[in-house]
Every structure is written in structure tokens, then in C-alpha cells.
Length: 342
Image (cartoon, rainbow, N blue to C red; front, top):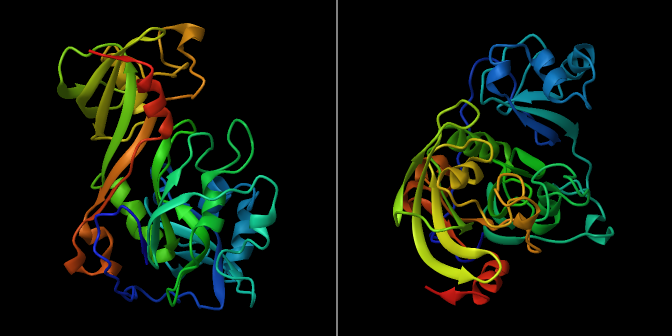
């Protein structure tokens, strides 16, 4: 187990997943090639149709997904399923491939030697999960706007191979997403058990997250709650002011901590605008047009996460909640160093 700046005791325990129904448990002869968490829109649908919709590149038709099911290379929550079996929101579907000796659990041969390869800082790691620092210039999954390496791909060369006896993923899988220009804490899974459990933890909103941001403007209150719908859905964010500075170029700058109660798309960026002080560098939601751009990009960073103990059962109950904190990116200090104290 690796643990750096993590408020978690070095405990680790392996639990055996419960066997349900009559479906067959996946064998250690297979590793996971691809993983997807079923969304609300596919709740109650068949496995084959769900795969065709959510993994269209792998399964361009439902027929191709059915063939994979007949080959017994599709698992739901760690158990082999048939094409006609139904899925529920939150289920984890895996596309399996036979484990090739010498390939390793990451399934990424020679990845570190590729051009542009770079590693992420890993704050915490055990057999089932890892918590790393995502850079603020890459997408969580996929190539993103500028191409290049995603955080998911970096994880494959940043994390240690899982020591779990079963259900090891070919490479660590993010359990949630950070916007491309947002850096900071990213929680990832290394096994099927970790992915199923941690994805459910985020879906249930029981994971507490803390973000740090620099806003352009002064807030009327030093703390409070923003309750403002985002895309027609309820959204709520707590905030607390840390300090205020005056910048010759950007005017009043306010350093704040955000504690989102919900997880809507661009929620913190939109709620900052609702407070009358957009995030520094936010060219999409800021009110200053091209003048909103900053050479260091968006000043929003995920700096803290608390995962309740019940969502990391492999660590053992005696370990308590998993609490991870980290500093904001170096660009924050640079931006504030150019300001005058208020």
C-alpha cells in the first residue's frame, strides 16, 4: 500500500464478494479489457442492448454484443451473464479477455516508452483503489480537446499492479470525472470490487469533496450556500472564503473552498457566476469575454476527499473513513503572489 499525505491508517483486508443467483463467477484466467457503469437511461434493459449503446466502438450492433455473451466474456458485477439478462442502474459491465502470461494486469506493454508519456502523483494506493492527482491540462477519459494522454491512460503507468487475488482490471479505472481544465484528486479503482463499490459511493453522494478556486470578485459573505438549478436540476454548493487579494490586472481575487452537495456538470463554475464572481480563467462562464483568459488556465482544483469506511470494506472497519487532502496546483501561489493583501 502506498500512502502519501493521506489521513488513512495503513490497513488492508481482502473480502470475498458474495455469490448471487446462478450466474458463474469470472475466472482468474480472464482480465477486464473494458468497463462501463450502467446509467439510469439503461435501467432494466438487456445486457446486449446496453453494451451496444454504451460501448458502440466495441459493439457496433446488439448482435456483436450477443456473440460476446455467448463466448462468456461479458460479466455483470463480477459474474458472467447472458445477452438477455437485465441490467440495473449502477451495475458494472465488463468486457473480458483471456489473461496472457507476462502481459501484466495493466495490459499496457511499453507504454512508458511512448512519446509524451507522463506519470501522475499517487497520493494513496491499495490492492483495490488508488487516489492520484490529475493534471489540469488533460481529460479524465479520452483524448480531450488537445489530444494527448488522458488521466486514465496515465494511471496505467502511475499505479502499482494490484495484488488482489481476483477481479483485477487491466488498468485502473476512474470512478468519477473531473472537467478537463480542472486538476486535483481523482479516485480510481484497480479491481472489479473497487469499481463497483466506489462508483456506487459517488452515485449515492456519500463521498465528500472539497475544491479550491480563485474567483474574480468579492463575495458579500465569508461563507454560505448556493442553491441554484443547473440545467434544470437541483444543485447545491457550500462555500467558505479563505482570503481576498487585489490584482492590478484582474481586480479583486477571492480564494475560496467549495463543498459541492450535488454533482452537476460544471456546477462549481456556474455557481461561482451565481455568486457574482466567476472562477479566474473561466472563458466559458466568465463575464469578461476574452479578458477572462489566464495563461495558467482555470483556477479550480480538487483538494480533498472523504470516503466513508463502508465504501472501502477491503481496508477493514477499524481503518475508519479514507481521508485524502492535497495542495492546490502551483499556479495558485503564482497568481496570488502578484497581488496585494486586502
